[in-house]
Length: 146
Image (tube, rainbow, N blue to C red; front, top):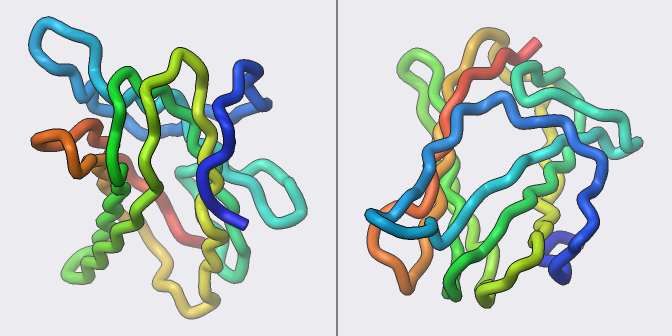
């Protein structure tokens, strides 16, 4: 079951994302959305890294973030590229009211097929909301499929 969970004041054990996150800062103020971290585990609960993806595995990602302004229809858009191949997918995470607590969101499981090409891939993840102009946060990085 994926989807938003209630705000949580106690953080779960985490492995820091190895991606460089954009601030999403608004001039002179606190950003409306702050991605705290993203952790990935296998379906057996074993920790994974963002930088190394193993063919044939199923990955479960949990996002932790603060919302400093009400966000309507928060969307996560993920673009992965390798050489001339590019794939973009978007997912509406939901609407989140301003809260001083930490939100956790369990992404749907992702299966990495055996036929996925080995090599270095680029990824860019952008968060937007229907009631905000522009990007709230941008995260980019590189990972290897082996």
